[in-house]
Image 1: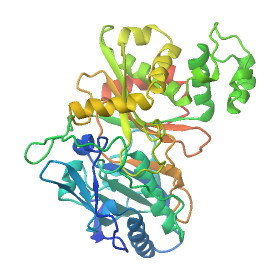
Image 2 (image 1 turned 180 degrees about the vertical axis):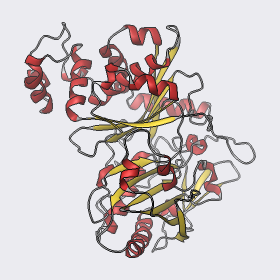
Image 3 (image 1 turned 60 degrees about the vertical axis):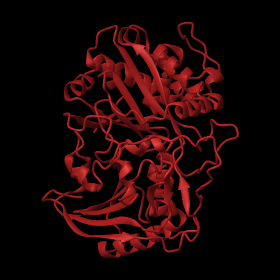
Image 4 (image 1 turned 90 degrees about the vertical axis):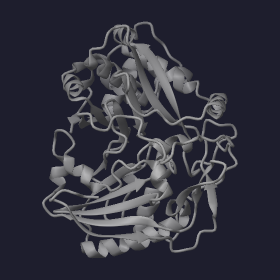
Length: 466
């Protein structure tokens, strides 16, 4: 809850579904349970002021939120643990928190000012540093609406043991869709639990529940790097073909890459040729570059093992596939390892290739093996950077964050709160301009961030450093 003199809490209330839930309980899955030690997801959108009063906006949002919850009844429930140790969502329509805050001294410019992400952004969210296990006695979600001098910030906060990023943005998008006037939602959530993630395995917790798995008091800097579509395509070309685009080939190749005409690209490629099945994606190329630059900035010993960890959506990786809008967590973590010396001694394409191969190999069999391994040894999700050589990539540029049009235009920006941030935590957002542009929310130790800012290998691709 806001604690700064620049922010005034106007009121806080409970919003419940406008219909009684016909779902009684949902059991947490193998993918949900490890998240109980993670903090609530905190993401939100910055908007211009609506074409009507702020008081009217608050009324509209409360009404539409109540309707939205009737489509997502688990979010209005509470966690319960049965005598056997299984954790469930009890869909009791207890409701979620709704906060209205005013901050007349904060403007859109203050939020988007170049430099480190300003501290005021953290005040746009409630449930700060709240572990998901707290859903046993706290609401599983909250919405905070903050009126600024010339705009509005709508923050959505959801228990991470209840949703992953896919389900989070499905809920947030639906909230916006209903506020905009939709009489019927375009995409209905699937609450089925007859999946490979449904398990009888039990993770035992100490009295009072788990503790956070990373240090929450270390000094950090947070900035947002913007990569245009053209910059991303140049990175992708370099990762796939092992060379930079020349002035002679630049416009021709970029045009073909924009049309995904990889097979027709015919330039000098240092002998490296790829077919479509081996193609390293734009995002894998970007991740490889970030891995190299952060590792270089940390000045690690050449023999030090570095880790690049990313979460992958398993909905389409399973056979049979899960429903696209399966509600809950359906993610697994993929760690890729390399010594600092090897990572920096070889080129970008080498790093991108090992990331690519690891992601491609994460198929139906790998997902099921991961479930079986967890059942043998139940454990929490290992957020953090204990060895000082890890990077964790979260979120996804594929999430429809800028679809959150509440009725008067797309968001100006997407921002997040303090939740689950530590040295080496990166979150990927789609760029506002779309067309494949990407924003990376980068959280690093201050000295490491300074080195990254001065690294020409990555900075040549950054068009804005916000």
